[in-house]
Length: 214
Image (cartoon, rainbow, N blue to C red; front, side, top):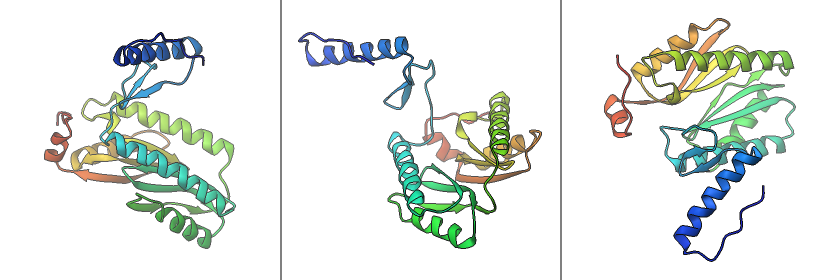
């Protein structure tokens, strides 16, 4: 993607022109959306999240570091790492209990990780068909959460593995119960596992979000 040439403008104006040029070029070239100040620009959406921008960046860093360190173990398996508010969920398959413990240990030592939820299964690797089914099932759960009028769908991170739905996020007990019920209602869901950080309604209010009606 080529950046626009800028004349010698005052710095604030030059930055504005640069940002506008980046967005225009990204739109024309079909580039990935640009993340500016916690908002996704270029996709027509503004992403909202109950984590701070700093924590979102930390979660991305944790996932990248974890993926690298798991590869260094040379473990034969299919390990996926998801971090939300520095709580790390491990899913997938490994050949034995030794490998399962080794993966947890190496991930737990990563900077900023608060806790590790180890849901790795001692099984053979899942098939391409199984992973495709999981992707479709996860999409159905997300769509059902969006359709619900009494929860904020963007408060939930949906992760799917072998028909099990893992729900992550910072939610109240009311939201946790309702979100789990919604996920269970989707055809094909085998089990729902809650991996939440619980908030009181008062704590939720301090985040600047409005609780959905009861």
